[in-house]
Length: 314
Image 1 (tube, rainbow, N blue to C red):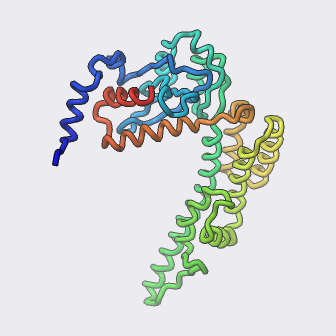
Image 2 (cartoon, rainbow, N blue to C red):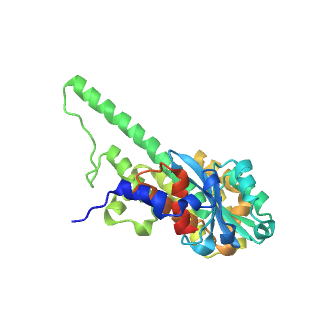
């Protein structure tokens, strides 16, 4: 049987088999790589951690759909000045052809997009907005869970002190209160129509116990439904106005903060309803980077890692 030493093969590929030594971007690869020829009219701007939490700003072309030709630029860091300096190396005429750029709500990303692509409409990715709503619901669930854990601990301590058997409530699905709140995590991420039979039962118990949590879930689900409907921008504005009213009536602090966040990015969020553009391709590309990183068991040589990425996606 023939065997190949993986480490030895990687060394040979790096030093001899590949053209890494002659790679034009090698001298500055750890700081930035640029592929202006991949720049299309629609771009996505996002961030990804390559290794040890080191963040890089990633600019990708939507036209490539996460495949060959995706990488336009990868720049070390997320500071607007640093990333902007590198992206401005792309020809001005090329940058002016960009008509839309999808990104999250980070101020640095918005500033980068404005300075480098002045003709591009900025579109806040819908999934970043929805994520904030879901996190608001999960925050409430987690707070309730800690309270349930504390109450159970008190019950156990009291029973031990008195030398009696503790009485812990068990619901019809077999969950204790602590378990109910822990196991409800995933169902709160999903819409009702995607619940399994056991999740439906668990949700019924959960919401009967905590009606305010159901109210918060309905707010998050209501925002999701606004995005899922094929609405004109004018109708989306009306739907959001109704949703804002529901948020105000709920009195939930986390959703009030979310409402203010949406208002601060209102026009860029509404731009989604013109073309329904998302960062799905960028998120897919980022997932591939993470998977590639896992296969290599980490990134020891960032320049070589980016070289290999470029071979596949640039």
